[in-house]
Amino acid sequence: MKNLFVSFLLSFVSFVSFCQTFVIEGFEHQELISFRNTTVDSVLMNPDLVNDVNNKKLTFVVDLDNKTCRGYVLDEFVFSVSTLVVEVDKKVLDVKLISDGSDSGIIINRNKKNKSVSVYWNGIGMTSVTKLNKFDVSKL
Image (cartoon, rainbow, N blue to C red):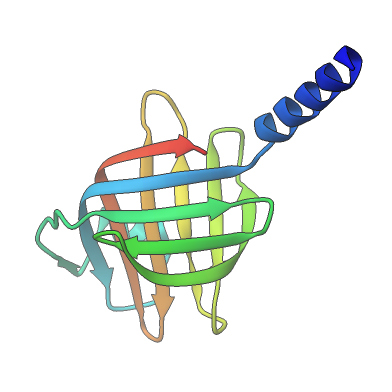
């Protein structure tokens, strides 16, 4: 009986430790826009329009196992889409949001000196980047 309990406990711990769900909470963010299709870096360096800083809480729940992302504004559910995760390098993760063929996603820079989170969307003749100024990324 003791061996069965230990086996069950070890199985549960290994399942929980490999769970690949994380939460991004943004407490302050700012949208930058370029009125052309361009790169995220280009928008951040030379935007055509910079909106005021916004303090509405944004939450993204990224489930790597099920390949989904759920989005919330002020804890109200807004969307759920499929994802494709691309690890750009050991420090940068690009979570591509797959919906209606648009090019959008979340870029997470995990570099200890320069942590950042940006949400991007390329529309027709426009690229929008929402830079999270104050945020927290945690694992579930």
